[in-house]
Image (cartoon, rainbow over all chains, first blue to last red; front, side, top):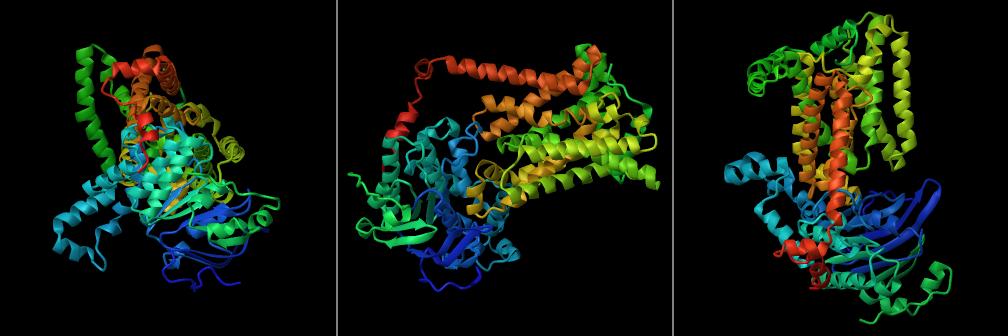
Length: 286
Length: 350
């Protein structure tokens, strides 16, 4: 077995590169020898039956877990050591912890700016505190105080407003998130990732329990965001959605059954083999 | 009158709290504040309202102590309740009781002069971190393990108290039910210091605490130190319950972390507002509870908690009533507001 810290030999500019990764919970193997790459600007769809290890693979890709064997890199660094959190947006399956939690849409979207108000973000590259104080005393002091108290700057607030406008939730800014529909709520989480100026948006079955019409609008939004350059990694149980929107598909059931182009995917028997039954892909017409 | 307990207990608490102060500087400052600022204000209020009780120094200490608890309880409790960890406060309070017992036992057995309050802090913080480590390992809070820690802590406490020479004389009820009548300047000093420490820590870590409370996985993906903040949250809880325990009692102290927060959650529109409303609800309960306790000679902790539950019932009812007003009537009452739900669903496509 290679170690998780081993240097990957994937494409240098891949957003995510998984090399021969394996993972298990105790003695139960979940992933076996998985290798794949997510290129910048890709819409990467990950499909597979329940319990096939999709969510675990996504967690490995984001560096939230370390593989038992093999290596995972994120933006060219070992994924678990990568610490530019603002570059990653994550949307879970119905993510809000408790629908009863009194928190507004704006408060949630503002979370996307939290990685930007860290003390280290106040200093430019290679700059020391003393140097920064000498060059731009006022900006450094106010930036430092803001970072310490986690206060958002004008620039942060502008990013929040723009993100909410981009996904069409400006009118909901002061509403409690628990009072929104499932589709609206998931837009809020997308806006949080956009406010963060994320380069990678990862979604784990985001539309479970969302009605059909809102789902379609949601995927159209994802499609448009991807077209504007955002790299998207999507776990989705509806294979039709993935074949319609994704530029790359991986089909997983503990090991990888397919990795490649959607048009090729629908012609192979990878789906049937991964699911162990006869599966047909229903194409959605848009 | 107030919850009665033996003079021995008072003496041990006073020794404990005084020892914990270390230098007398904090104590002096709090004493000065009590005499010249808070006390002077209360004296003036006593004259104006014709309520002499507000002028008694022991009542002034009781009010200030209860008001401090009403700030730090909901401040920390809001994060706990919305992380669905309401029971952790109760669990830590019961293990803090074991901590007090450990202190008394060690003093008696080894002829030491440890402050029982110090051992309570140590045991409660230790248990808090242990519970959090167990959760990190298991991945979720388990009712069963919290129940085991809670009852286990209490069991150890009761064994040690009865095994300590003169332990029964210490007055177990003083720890269980708390007391306002015997609030010393040192007690108030601890609560004021804790208000500053807990308030400061929450102010410095508010945003990451909020992110972790709301969506821990996304917070991890954004590279926040989720474990650190979760541990901080339980340590803050331990600090609050131990410092409030002497006044509220082991059994009731956790209510101040939960009940006002639940009341605020019914009406608050945002998280910040829910913290503020929680503190307001708790302040009302604290002031009303202390007043009722003095007027009718009933237990202070119980009066505060029952008042807080009353506030919760009122806020729950008012929310239910508000919901029964049809939304189109509300919209007509507020003509400037758009039907933003429709706009968001239909107009989102870029």
